[in-house]
View 1: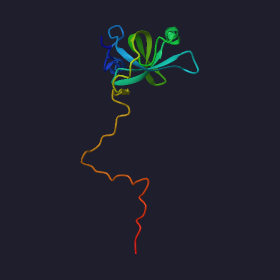
View 2: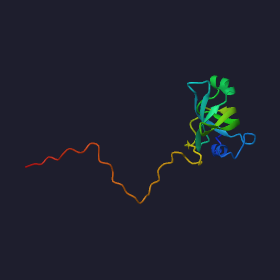
View 3: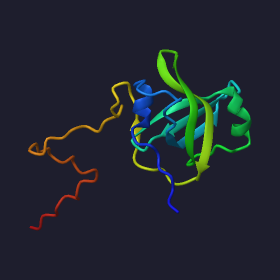
View 4: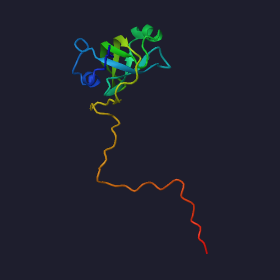
Amino acid sequence: MGHQMPDTGAIHRIMATEVKCETFNPVVQVVDCRRLPTSQRWRLVVSDSQHYMQCMAASQLNPMMEQGEVQIGMLARLEQYVLNNVQGKHIIIILAVAMLGGPVDRIGAPAPYNANGNAALAPPTTNPTTTTNPPPPTNPPPPRQQYQ
């Protein structure tokens, strides 16, 4: 039996407010999970295999978090969530989640999500016709001895 896979593009769909949790319950992978040092709140980073972003677990999920039911690498279905603006940033607040399995290795090569729906740290583009000089060697060769 194969693994359930994250719903690619789910983070963009949620962040662009194209969907509501009443009609869209995506599968995501937990790529980080930790308690905030100054509170009883938990921060999660979830991935849809294309993008990842920070989320907060609502306080009613604390028992689930503290008992280790949510672990890095696990797949989860977001059953209830809201999109909130916290300190000028949109963040998904997870209200209810169903753990589906895992943990498994990270799926895909997700990039950070930004408001444009693109990777926040896109790799630089290169022009294949442009050539650059190689950097100088770190250890130059010893000078040649001259014989007389």
